[in-house]
Image 1 (cartoon, rainbow, N blue to C red):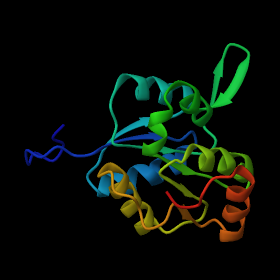
Image 2: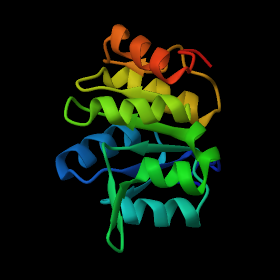
Image 3: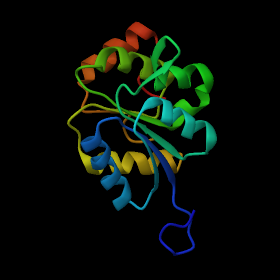
Length: 162
């Protein structure tokens, strides 16, 4: 869809973030980079959008919970179960609260990139651009201590690189 009136299609990004100030922060970064952004305030809405439209990149706030009946899970778990091919277009934002479990799943799923907090916004913008263009980023892990990544990769028998 042409959002700038220049005839060019802009990459489509699905942003799933439940925290209002963080959602606005990401919307600002993505908007400045001229992405067409669809925003979901919770995991269920995010999955609905992901199932209804094609996106070049999905930015997933941590942990983006979803509920189906009495079962509680995360968007990442649902993607793994329903559409594992989407993992290659997911950028996960994590924190010290959800870090280890989410990081373990993200590494195993081989998501596009994982950002810890705080992180460099210019690096984030470049990584989203790489994801939208289907280019591998220089690094998959940002603001996460390398020994943590190495240890989890070894435990999961998954290489750190693609």
